[in-house]
Amino acid sequence: MRVKAAKGSASGGTIASMKNISEEAQKDKSIYKVIFNPYSLCPVGEREGQDKPDLQKVVFDKISNSYIAPFIMATINTKVVRRSNALAGYPYGKDFLYNESMMVGKGFSGKMKGNMVLLSLGAAMAKPSSLLGKLISWYLPKPGEGPNKEERENGFYKFLFFGKTASGKTINATVKGDRDPGYGSTCKMLGEAAVCLAKDDLPQVSGMLTPSVTFGDKLLERLEANAGLTFEIVE
Image (cartoon, rainbow, N blue to C red; front, side, top):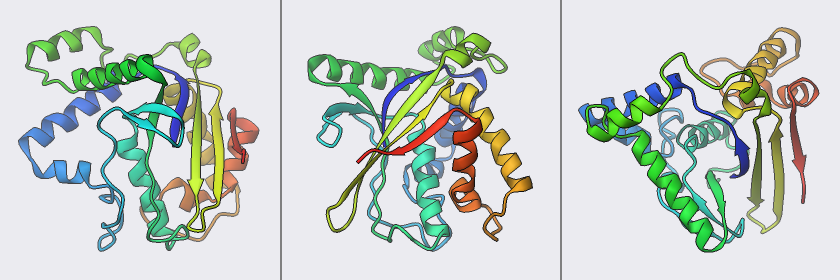
């Protein structure tokens, strides 16, 4: 998955959560093993595979024909996708590979933009007790603060998916949303998920599930009809 374009803001709560993870990992180094293991959310006994840890540098990506940089949500998202594959009985196969990153453009400007993304991520994770950490904390929103109504409604996102089967067939897709991805769109997803649980005929599964395993295509239909999302196979 490549983030082609997005407009949105972080909240103070999200930033505080990220800092807390960093602080806890510095106290307990074993937490890093969970963060960097691509399969750490998979069921016990299923936590191995061919995927590598999430991107941590700027590289040129031939698939999207663009420089790419780390995507802040990849650390969570990619693990959820792999858990879905495992819980569903490996419909994509045990050799399934998945990664996420941000497209930042071509040429020198694209590479520089990617490096700015790296610097921003590094600064956001600075120790709160350090001078840099204190400066960043002063500038960033505090817990309880976040994008206002206008910012939420003017946000958007477009994700590109580049798939390739074992036989070499390519399947490309796009996912688009018409609101701030974190606070204008996610809340609508949660609302539709609740309605989906209450009203739709869903797979008879239970446990610590993921959205795709829980809802199948029923949630996709509701998101397109009511939540401003579109899912499209383009090639």
